[in-house]
Image (cartoon, rainbow, N blue to C red; front, side):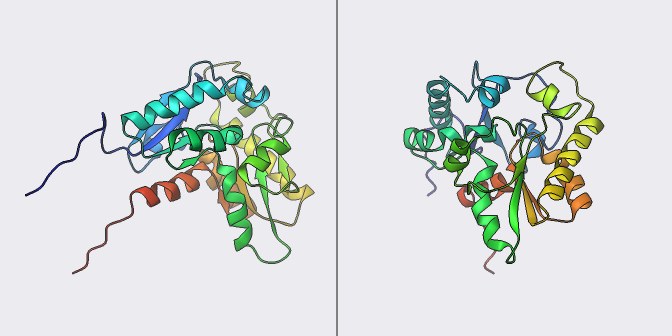
Length: 241
């Protein structure tokens, strides 16, 4: 006899994603595009949590809204929670304590793991959407060593202006990719010891392949983190016969 267990509102999508409130295009590969994921996910937009508020203003006053939204996702059926902005590493501890399920707020939490894979003399570098506002607090909350080199995209022509400043609702994807490549070039030039790159921004995975081809070092991002994260809550079932 087979007994189906209830108690949730939704089933089959164990990963919940807390989304910023924004209107820029989310192309395939972007965390906010559901076709990015090889498994179903649950989304919850956190009202008032704009990219400007979270990235440029330190998410000041935003914690209660994120706690409520995360709890709502768990109540609906999420068994693990992640977020749509690496700068939300600031809320890692509070979110995990509040919802009582695994939480991965930022792709930056991969940095110590990746560092362990590199040969002597090499280190992890990061590309962030906003180098000027990524603070030691963000790094510490994600477990990132304080001396980790990183560069931002503020000086670019398209990526930062569209995503953070919200100057328009369309985006020139080729220009955005060039901004990411320019940031990678600046990182590798100033820190030739970089042996792997972590992309802080959850909107950067569409450009990871181009970075890999350009600089020939491993590239990690929110996609690599969340596919690993999901594998833990839904391990693959292997045939035994």
